Amino acid sequence: MSEIDRFNNIYIKHYDKTYRFARLYVRNDQVAEDIATESLIKLWETMKKETVEKPLALLLTILKHKSLDYLKKQVSIEEAFEAMAAWQQRELSIRISTLEACNPNDIFSEEIQQILTRTLEELPSQTRKVFMMSRFEQKSGKEIAEELGITVKGVDYHIAKALKALRVSLKDYLPLAYFLFIQ
Image 1 (cartoon, helix red, strand yellow):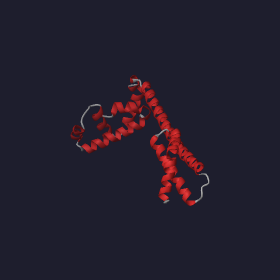
Image 2 (image 1 turned 45 degrees about the vertical axis):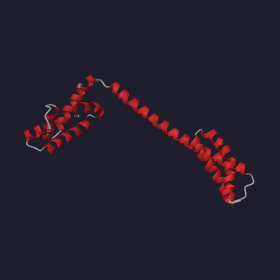
Image 3 (image 1 turned 120 degrees about the vertical axis):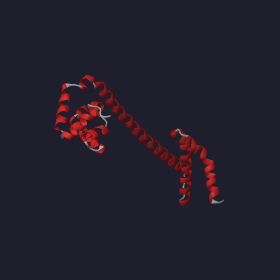
Image 4 (image 1 turned 90 degrees about the horizontal axis):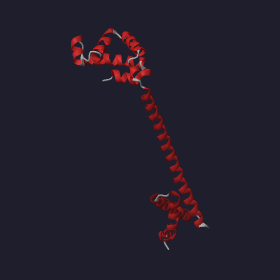
């Protein structure tokens, strides 16, 4: 009998029970088929190298380890998904609580107005002028550039510089700053 015939005999004789055993634990037909086939191949490779006194015991051991490896990997995947879901839930809760705590009257509170005024006063005069024309007078970049005799890129530079300074000074009120100044 050839080596292939001997393997086919083992495969035909033991495949159904190896598949059912694996399926009982992994609860996935495709995975059970893979485990059964891999286990039978591993048994065959071992039998080619050495004498196996109890092939069914060895086959069961191989099946057990392959099934355990699969199940342990599934546990790790589930734990990763649960950790990600927990993180997403925490992040969502933070966004909800931050939004619930947002009081529109606070946007125009005296404290924010003072921070805004102080920050704008600390800016170079050209930057302050460009920013105020853009945000408070609602002028376009092109209009500001023409009026001040600078380029549109220059206008963009001054606005970006002012926004950066405001982001730093209003960091505790950042969501409100975006509402007020970002177009």
